[in-house]
Image (cartoon, rainbow, N blue to C red):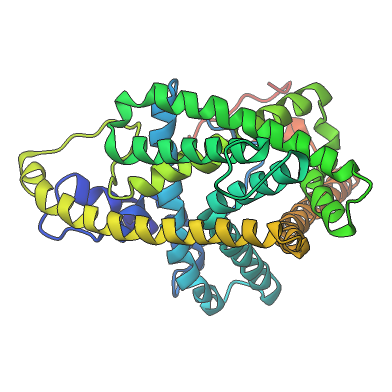
Length: 396
């Protein structure tokens, strides 16, 4: 049953210490909802389906402090990353379902492709974010080689790297409950750097010497904010949108840098973050063996992740400094592919929503014309579920 997969991640933490999961598997079951949904849509010899209910509302208790938010995002990031690895490895299972049409399976594969692109982007985003910051700072302010400390662009780059290193140190050496003020300082300054980068990109785009590649890159960046606006014209609130856009830009380095670095640095922590947990004596007795296994995995994974992001940031910035602006076109095409996939999926949802509204209106009109739409008669029917007979007469 899908519920078994939904609850499998609790076994190791709450008592199943005889068969400790690997660190990757334990992280995978932190995103238990994705695993359960995969089991529903891809379970062999079953015809289960998932329905989307637009009117459903979910009430949750949001984190009230930065520490709780960091813990929550650690679980979400690591869980979604390893669950996506699992889903990618199992995506062909949907073709064995007889209840799925060929067109629906194609849409599932399209969705999986989008998830794969997002997974790759999230893995290298820290390096790309630094590269974009470096490109626009050097295009706007005076700059020199990497060892200069007098040029404005070099000073800003070095400060950015110092804050990145500070986040890494806070994430790997300090208990997160004691590191809140450090994360707050990094969040404030890196948010200011990002606002500066956006302003610099505007001046860069308005520069008369800017070529077509740079304009395309800036256009894609702006489109990432305009497209959601166009797709929500019915519920448009300009003030809220502008306020949310400013907050989103300012907080983007917190989500990109702080949350990502902390999540990767604490990949060995497979607890539920901000959720309270309890452990019995047997679990505590096996904690040392489990911690050793998971910390070894964390060390290897963190080293690989650091090498990849440092390489991405170095290659992109070095290429851009050589006056080769094709690198902006490459980044723009990559971001455009993500935006294009989101746009296609959003348009498909809008079209399907309109189509269902048309079908409902058509069926409603047919029932009304046939004379079968009788509220008085329907209220006189017996309630088959309870066996209670409703009184005849006026509708209740």
